[in-house]
Image 1 (cartoon, rainbow over the protein chains, first blue to last red):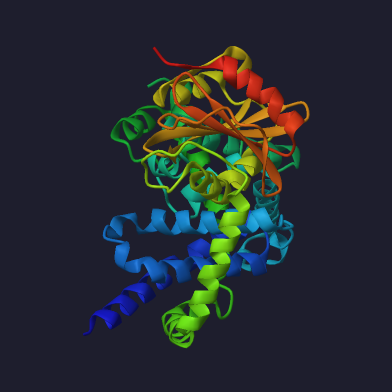
Image 2 (cartoon, chains in turn cyan, red):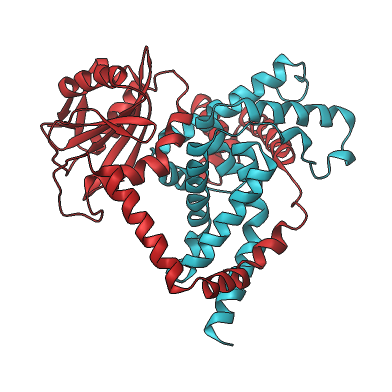
Length: 175
Length: 241
């Protein structure tokens, strides 16, 4: 197999493995379907161009997120996107859940969308991308202790949202 | 581990596999019940954050290598000469009015660093700012890790603070709250600049501030807002002993 086809096969493996998570991440930071797709496309375009520089395959997740966040920052500088499309994106398996669980998930989605970015982004890195607290700290350039505080507060706000909207029977006294 | 610390770790990392955390969870029914509730919330979070892959997205991504090769092939030397010339003009005009001391680092100049950090992280940091001061002890700890102390007045107005790459050393990138709006301050431990007048920088204005150790870049929407933080930073940022 030639070097170029090795590179292409490696790229396709990365796309298959991470495209959906990057799309979810992008969607939840910008709330706009078209922009999220553009961000993911642009991230993989840059990843393709720089793939030869990626020597540590264990760092690939962080590498892709760094590219995506920088792309988002550039976009954000040009125009602040409207956080509008989250409710229109189909949630996998939602239709199979009991109605009360669907309500809870809808409330959680509203809660996540309304979290301040400094709470939402670490939460997305942890839940969507599977980052450890230390990996989040490295990506955001803050301490692990600060990351833990932000994650704790993010979940606390989501729990309060559920309590405030009456979904208290199942998630209670967590914190 | 007491229950308070357990709950703190549980809220931050519910699926923590640290042996001490797991042992604490398994040793006490109260801890276990809290962990089970947390796990249930995590399941709901997973479901809430789920999305289907948009139709055509993966196919579009896997076509990138072919399309990239085609584009590279079709862009002749003439095209790239025009692009290079246009870029050079933009850079020259954009920074013609700025005068900085240059140093030996991975960026060609301080203005190149300023442009890169502002483009990559400036808006994102401002987006993270919510108008509330961050934990002062956390701010002091982060600043100390890059060799600086800050006055209480300055710390009380820091909304977001991250460590960041700066020429030749790790520095700090912070958003400082003022009554008129946020100001971004980037501390560069190994760069010396002269105290600069406020100059246009894209849709912002920028200024350099010489400090007893290193220097700082300040970005804000107008001169008045920058001036307030400029004075506070000049007095309040001192080398850590």
